[in-house]
Amino acid sequence: MSERKIKAEFPGLKKSPFFLTSPESPHYNCIAWAAGDSQNVWWPHPPPLVSYWPPGVARTQDLQTFIAAFATLGYAVCADGTLDAGFEKVALFADAQGKPTHAAKQLPNGRWSSKLGLLEDIDHILYSLEGAQYGKVVQYLIEAEKPHRSPRTVGVNRRDWCSSDSDFGLCGQICPKIPGGRAQVVGTDRGAGRNRTDE
Image (cartoon, rainbow, N blue to C red; front, side, top):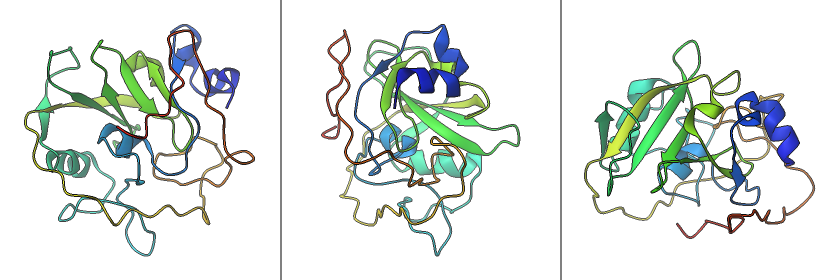
């Protein structure tokens, strides 16, 4: 997707520098990316829709459920997004009704990384994504411990349904509108544009 369209969807990016850091991918979404998983779509869809969600965590779209999901990875609630060297942080976004819509993870330099629905990953200033699409940052989490992470085997990408009129949609809404075929890596002047699927 062009930088122009991204700026149109997220007006905060018009005055804040951001960098495309991956091609588009339908194989994972923002919650998965923040959780360190680039193989599955994470969202608490109830059956019959299929997506990965940590075992034992309720499949409801509320803030406490998302906090519980990240707790399975060793994350705990923290006060803010201040950079703490050696600790990973996640920011959860929610809409005006308090329903989670997006997650971003902090980079070692203090900036943030987000997967825009099923489109590209970007490197950005955190609050530049606040607005009509994702609402506002409502909670910060810090990775207090690193438990053993067993392979995730239940993630399934469904592209036969879509309830969003936007290419971005909610992060859990898997939209089949990815434009024609495989996207090319978009390079930037900061050496980005590599595919981060190995992370």
